Image 1: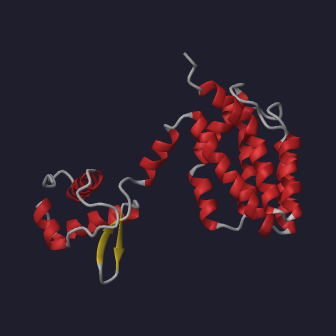
Image 2: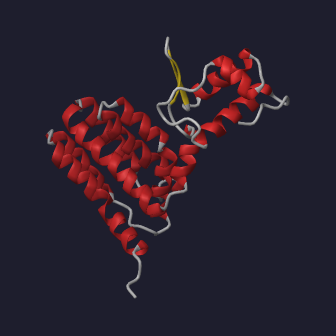
Image 3: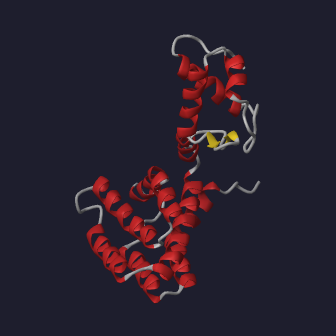
Length: 228
């Protein structure tokens, strides 16, 4: 591990630790050295080490366990994870989005309230078409509808994950506006609300999956390796 430079000791120390984690010096779940040992490795004070570790904890790379020490939680930050997600192919993004939408619909069927159903119906009515205010506004309205389904799932982790994934979801919606894949119409979206209303989780999941099916099928054809 390289000693921290004096340009900005805390940032430099954090960067050295980040590189060490990325290089596999400590694996996920492994405890990193204590403050004293890190001071020696980085050639900085305890205060600098403490601030560097605190920064990596806030970024999700490390976690501190009271009375036990500091452990590696992840090998890359949430920002890096988002870059990796966005660098995925359009088919991969659609498949990941579909997985979220299907599970959200399943859980919403089991946990929704009448207020949830009313909110979905209101957002669907407002969704309209691209002609209503342009593409950018349409994308926002479409995302709002799908997010209302996720919120009705009552699963906080799923809601947070959907928010984190939202920029990639925008790309999937935009792909329908330029004609790369077919855009699901109002009827297909309304079918999700009706399925959720029945309380049948499997039906709701199947309807949500059906909404993405035409896009996934086209992307599968586009990415298929030609037969020699």
